[in-house]
Image (tube, rainbow, N blue to C red; front, side, top):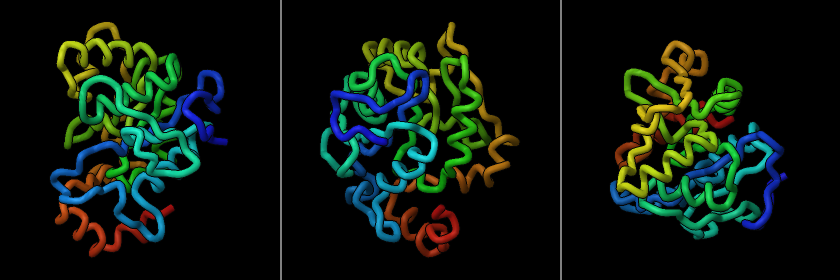
Length: 212
């Protein structure tokens, strides 16, 4: 069950809290992508549904906008962009591992999220990595990695994909051959940033093919 308030947690001990990142400014999209409809649900609702298949609690890092009734809505933490959303979740759920999924990655299957959690047992972080680079917006961050992230943001370093370079963190990469079990990486991590991305996505019928 998901807690509907910010002050309590429904997470099981040692289990990650699912965090939907939905606080972006959507400048390139030209409208709030968090409100775009997908077969009767919004992008944050889609991401929350998939995280809920893996996590005992799901929260929405939406800058406190209350985008998804029934789920905790979290204000941003320090910094800006995804780092601020992630650190807002850290403030609300301190000491817990966080499994994050950006709402504009609509094709990540729950099975891949479950694999990330499985691989993360005893580690500080798990990041998918393929020819397109490291994907830090569908990843597992343990408490130690989140502490390092907070320190980096305090120094003005906001890029999440650079976190694995920090010394002292035990990081596992989910490599391209492993990702391929769940679909082509370019399809699985399709990112909706612009109106053209959205139009191609809808025109290709991707929504109906990967709506589970």
